[in-house]
Image (cartoon, rainbow, N blue to C red):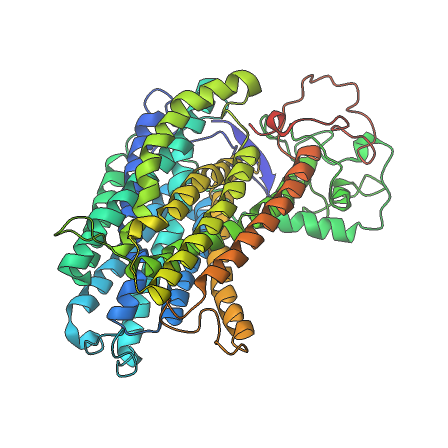
Length: 609
């Protein structure tokens, strides 16, 4: 087994597995012929479909339960939903940290999968027992007389809800990372399979969402939320069984120990040596030669190209002027270590540009559902569409589009771009962000028409009039969500794949929190008008949701322009791992401070694996 020498935070030298090391369920080196590949990833895809099925059925219809059963107001219910979903995705960072540092992906999924399952069970019990809920009351007709859930009843609900949030948050990034870990990046054929896996993961996500928003929401509507929550628990249990069934086929990446220590070391070392001048001798660069007491870089991680961005961090890998003093890891870092920190900093602007995108997603799970509840939901004489099932419309489209995209578009685009994914993740993200603006434009136009018909003409429009906003956003999400996950996972930060994948989910969190903040701010700012705030009432026929949608459309377009700037900056100043074309590069002996390995402008497709 290939091993790597590394110092821990105490300065002691020890060995850890290098990045390409994987083990089986017993901790033995994995066998490429019997471990990993799409067969092993299929079990993870099964869990992903069932997990999203379970939580989507709860989250997407939660606002109806909060209003009708727990008797919270519309604005408060919307904020509870967005805060819950935001917490799920924020806790993804915890799941990524625990996985990369201590537990590994498989055990993190298994442990927190049972935490999520316990939350579903507790929600089902509360919804079934009348003593654990407020007395029944019609919020539309007698909202002033309805008793809001408080005390022990509210406590039980929020404990159950946030057990689901904790479990799901820690499971989500590790499902993606564990599935992607089944493919070796050193193998060109498996590299193409990795891109196929990311599309397959979104296909599994779409299948889970579709079943949740149709069958499971229908069960909630016609059999009660207690049965609906119980079905979510059963589905989650089935997903965990599928995960365990594949244990003999997985290739597992061992945890690397505390992942933040090397990052902190770079910042501390750069700060301590902030006044040191750049050395003219390349041997003053740590890592230029190795011995028993030096860090020997692994073959795959030694080829990070030094970049000219964030040059203040470069001093972290400069040896002391005399070159004789043995320095601790908190004063001297490797060039590779510094470049990995630069990668982390470089991806932050890309991450930030997807927050507004997820704020729009929050509207489709809250206010758009309420829109549907005020429209004609009749499909046939005896069948009515549950408003929460509106969100299934884009997934019906996507279960056909995603396979077509992977089967036809990717190979076609690959002929022109040479990129294994057809188009680079950055371009895929950008196209998705551009489309999301039109989702809100469509939503604003349709809401204005719906409100005018209800208020002025006393007519109820068909619920199908608001499907365009779901369809456009569904297509937008296929590009943005998959592109973002692929972009982050493929960054060359050793041992942090689960944590970087968690950062993509953290974008969802910030987006949903921003949604809550925007709702509160808009209500406060617009409440000075004679008609009250845009979203001050529990009745959308009195509110101005259309104006709120126009605000989001404007913010989305400005965000797209912001993304163009940062993606261009990332394009011109890449920080991704690249194999040097010639190991005997004549420039390698030049001064590290002044040599620019990226002097020519390159297309981002050349830098994203």
